[in-house]
Image (cartoon, rainbow, N blue to C red):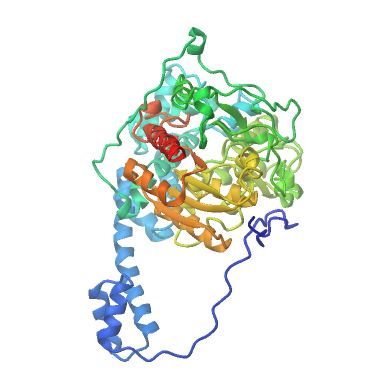
Length: 602
């Protein structure tokens, strides 16, 4: 069995789940001879620099200049070129959102082209100044206060569309005057409410956050990952028809959402009966959002050998909600919680917030980690709403502030100062080591997106813990839609040696995160990374299985873009362009199962 690594999972610092066992630096070696101009040119080309920039740097500093000087010069040329291109893309990005070019250029000069959120806030503020007067926030009356409703902010399927009214029309016109399209304005009013329930500024905030999140892939994507005009193919494995009419009843979400049981709650279930088809190897584990459109989980279950989903809300395991469904054929007896256990409340996870936490904010859990954050404009409005009151603010103010705090997962970091979670804090809540997504060319926006779409590691580790006694000498894993490696982190924290991991992940930055994690934790096994599940052919799967002796676990969660409740534009279920990749998971799992049978017979 693999020896216990030196990752600092037992740190007493509440935020310091970190990896500290980096490889030591190699011993110093004698200085190498200075390469000739031709050798230097060839070496730099091999490193990926453009010949034009190499020639420019050598011409500027001379052929005998130090290699480091030449590389620094090339890097400056590259950054200058990319900055110019990036600035142009930033302008195009905000022009496409309906803002005036003059104001966009002014905002970019003031905040820099990399500060997308600040530019957006400045443009919204500018537009709000010429829009109709915004109603005073102290008149706002909020009608919903149930924690569960706020926890479902981006995933609930039960929101009601407001009836059209004169107030609705006024807000629609105001948003369109600010440069937003009629569709965007209508969707924002539908999602956030109308009349006294929400201000124009809140609606503008909502639209801007949605635009930034929606356009992230196109705006920031690695050119190698962009595949225009490639339609995702939908593959449906054949399944036997269900035998009972009762099976056609839609699946109902349990309350409380604790699946077969969680460590901190009573009612543990240790036995279940799997359909015969699901008892064949390998083990499989599939995850997606629980609050999907009607019929989605019936379809998922029927395509995964009629295994009923296990629905779990991670708020029963850690300090943040995360409603997910898991379809798997793992044993459910003998589960145990990974150590150290996650912090169970907000105050335990972030003890420094206790000093500033107002008594009238009764939250003990955060809502689902989102892929976008609240704007600086919103947190400033909260500060301005509370500053006039030395003691407890009026009820209307409290309701407004609590609503925004629950909606955007804000925590208290100072007097009257509510702030969104930082990526490092999200890593802690989701069970990743500190700095797991930090650096390596990954922007803050990319970190938010990757963390918002990841596994909750402690929950997944609780389910996978049953594998430890079954694979004492290591496990072969096929990881589909790997993301930032939540499944791999869970296995590592459980101290289950990973002999082989074949990972399939479309995002280059996410693949780099897993690769860095693999090296930093001194994994002894083999990591092989692919970019696209659709490029993983049946023949390649068979080849890999013969090379490594098969797969013991097929784990993954296909994109939830067309399933999540926050998507009011293309929430088309498993027929959507991204979420239809679920059928690729089914295809690959079928090939693994059939190949496993063949290999066992031979």
